[in-house]
Image (cartoon, rainbow, N blue to C red; front, side, top):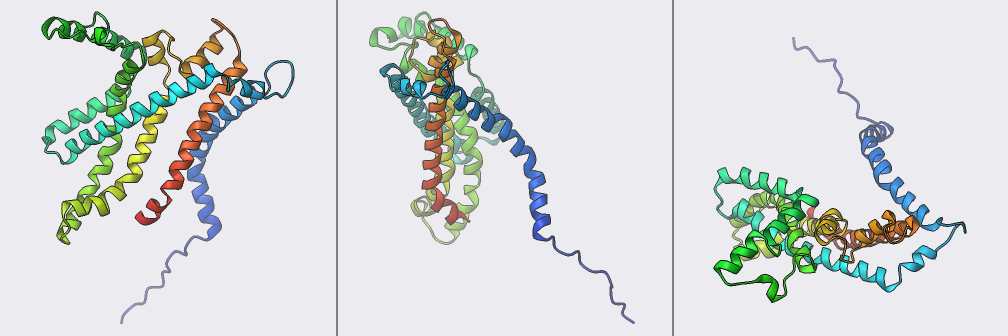
Length: 296
């Protein structure tokens, strides 16, 4: 005689339980975001409108429209955009070489390990390394001068100016792009195989499938490179001794008191940086809503 099982399946979780479970897992991230993102941002804004003895004031935000501070934002945006675009293009090419360019598999771990180390190599050590390599008496400079009769500094190059900063920043921007794009390109193999089985040519695959899928991670990685360069301070300050007009360097000067001491103006400058990054991120989200919907 067949026995009928009397055990019942576990009832599905109701809406309140699901919300509570999701909230518990989200709590650590939410706490981290509040402590290290929202509270510091609020503190910057409060400090920028409450400086001095006049209570609430917009004086410091008005000072941001002076030529010296506008030029600092302009140079910072140009430097960040240049290093982000160049780093994105070169980084994608190298990432593709790792994933689908025939690089021996035993070299891939070494390449990715180097990218991980180089992407975090910044600040004073990086400035010293480039000064010893491409400085006026650096190893590379002397080698080019003695063996190829090419003097970089006689042709207008300077490591301690805008072009020098671009080259220096690319040392950690390109490896960071490689690390960001290798996982995205790894996922393209199954899409490519499916498209080829259905008769698609390589051009059709990249135009109709590959580029739409990669557009979201590519733009997101480029935006991350922009922010990574936009907020860099130690490398630029150590390399140029603070002589280049970048917003992080100006903020450091306002806080150090070497020439002036205005913490509220420094807060206003930092709020301006936050607004620029927020605007860029908002545009990024708006332009990629269709891509996210299509991928789902």
